[in-house]
Length: 463
RNA sequence: GGUCCCAUCGUCUAGUGGUUUAGGACACCGGCCUCUCACGCCGGAAACGCGAGUUCGAAUCUCGCUGGGACCA
Image 1 (cartoon, rainbow, N blue to C red):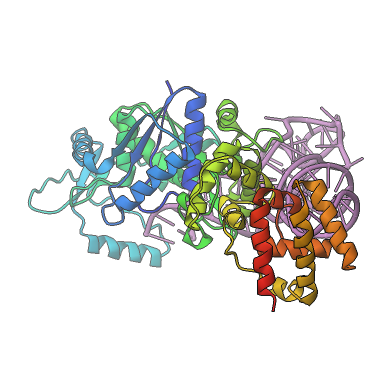
Image 2 (cartoon, rainbow, N blue to C red):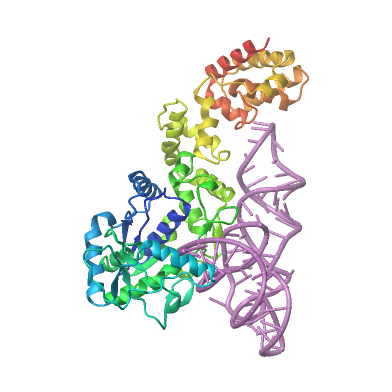
């Protein structure tokens, strides 16, 4: 049975890159009908924060990426790692190293100056030292010769020469285990069969394989996914805008859009662009994941988001846009009126936040009139147009496109202005803006009384 | 600096030796629709990093170079 894990360090928010790694793990696992584990790698006490852990978990939940076991916290497992470090020591796969940090630092600097590789010179490797009164680290005994290779599920065979690897520290002098060690212990103990992670870990892989072998555990399959880069082609970081995935939620993105977008970043299925989650699970294969890094493109994400705004069931959009209306101080029911409003806004809004802003005038009559538009249309002539419109509008029995069109046409004919100008003046009066959904549908939705009040208010604005 | 990875339109990518005048999508440009803004529809511009080799034939295989990235220091 396939077992995977997503193992973030809570030293930062869940960003696009992490979310994609999680998604690929999730899609692969569900496709294979396996089990996915969430493990929080919080051994770096200095930099790990609970705030980040919460952000990661909430981000995953929001995206609909669920897991089967965990979250497990490495901080609670320190004793376990320590035990295994000593096991390696006893079996002769590791040794105590008493080299003082300052001495190591001096040697390193000298090596760099002389143009040699600054790796540990293995002073303590074969001395079998065991002083109890002096601080020491435990180092892994890397083979001096030979090579380590593995068949990456995305990249094919990757080989490293052992000479290039030095004897890495697995347990620090304060008794805390190091990253490359804890990962192996956990992946082995948790029965992980497929490690899907960012390709920034490729260089760690040979060291980890050596530890698996020393411990006698089966080496899992590895799949290294290329990084997601910012516009400047460097690793995505705080400089590139929205940090946490939850920031996208705040900005009015839909999780469906984000999941779809992220999935297509580095993975493809012919020419298809739009995938539901079920479809992704059905079609996702590691062999279709690309090898080259990709650049995050906000424009395409926005397009994807507007696609889902247009196509998701209206009740779903209604429920979600309510949050954003509430932020504008508008508390609404998820009912028929909202649905009418949404239907006019769907083709226009790229985000839910934008949709809420556009919807403001449908719910409130205290909207501001756009300044430049006011200057252009709220003139003496404009006032006449509004007065004429109001007079005719009050007389019509039923509000529909036909009757409204007649009103606009006669107003423009009588005052000798273009139809478009009559429409724009009324549009500005009833919404405060010059770009809105079609004027007829807007008036139909607002209703006769509200429309009249709005027109009168606008007339009052004109001096 | 060392190691490792990567390389098709600006961006995401299809393409696995001939079906390719290299396809789709975003963005961009033009047109249509039209009460504004959008949506939609139609059309356009836009790429195989360079150089050798293998082959009858290479975007596709091999090597080198160049460029980019990551990790370690």
